[in-house]
Picture 1 (cartoon, rainbow, N blue to C red):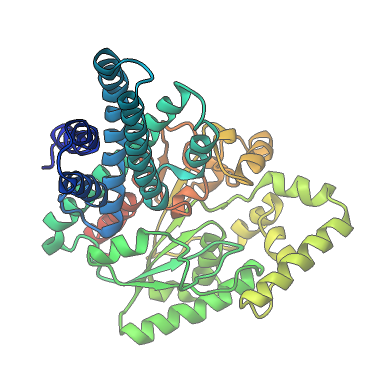
Picture 2 (tube, rainbow, N blue to C red):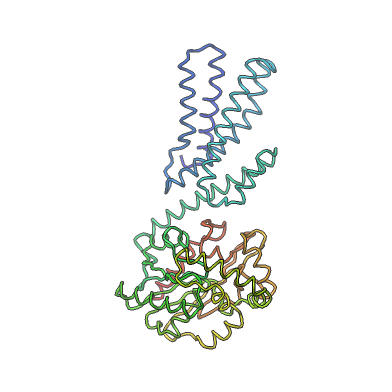
Length: 442
């Protein structure tokens, strides 16, 4: 039963009937095995709330969790409105049967609630840490806890519905291979990150692209170097991919500083002959004016301590020669102005760019909610790090906005939090971006 209302009603009836049956069985003195049957039905409904197939086990657990929470709210209403009033009217308040029903009611409701909320908390991504914490803090506040629970349920349902629509959409266009571009894709990460096997920098995006026919490789440069050195590593990687695939060229999609590294590799190191297109995502092409201010005002001792701490950690993580200060200094607005005078676009390469902005910084994650304020003061609208005006580059610029309170941050554009927004699907955005490259013959 895919109809949500019918499914929840059916589940509620089974849970209510099986839980309250024990009281009726005890009242009429029916044989013990009737209790066993009622208990078995209640247990099965908690273990298998529905038999609807979902695209993944994770979504099945999440969907079942939201069903159980809906059934909990229904049980809470039925028990409060009818069971208690009926038991008082029939057996009298504080009678043995009255307390039997109260105990049964509390046991049933708590079992259903915790069964549901644990499933949702363990599998839901759209509820995020914020609503998880709000749910914990408001759990004992009457009325407020119901409102919060309804929000958690709605986010869970939204995630399930969205993933099912995605699965249907991917199934319908499977044979079209909309992301099967002429040339393979090279995804280039930004500063302070690495291409890790266990934690993909691009979140769920690569899997979605591959599902739709894309061939993907990664830049694999170190996390923190100056632009020139990062570009040299990237140039070696571009040639490796060309040799490995036998392809004439490739398409680069680069995020943040990775876009500057890519531009340098193309314009200065001669890699333009191997690249058909360069798409930069929230790249500070004109630098970050607030970086100039921060680096000029921060005490030298503090800068050195931050650099030492980062470089030490990066070396442990696999960088061979991390240089925190060199990477940050190359993001200054003054440095990028010099960079743009030297690094000009290459004829024959299609350049395009993407930018986004945060709406309300306090609705975002640290440190972007903090850095946004500095960037706003010096650079105007920004994604927490990169100004919109700085992200614009090339033949085509896409300015992304969201009506969500938090907007679209620097991290959202690489699916760092692994969750969608009501009006922005980051995975589908990249599918359409790559599909457009295919349509252009790249």
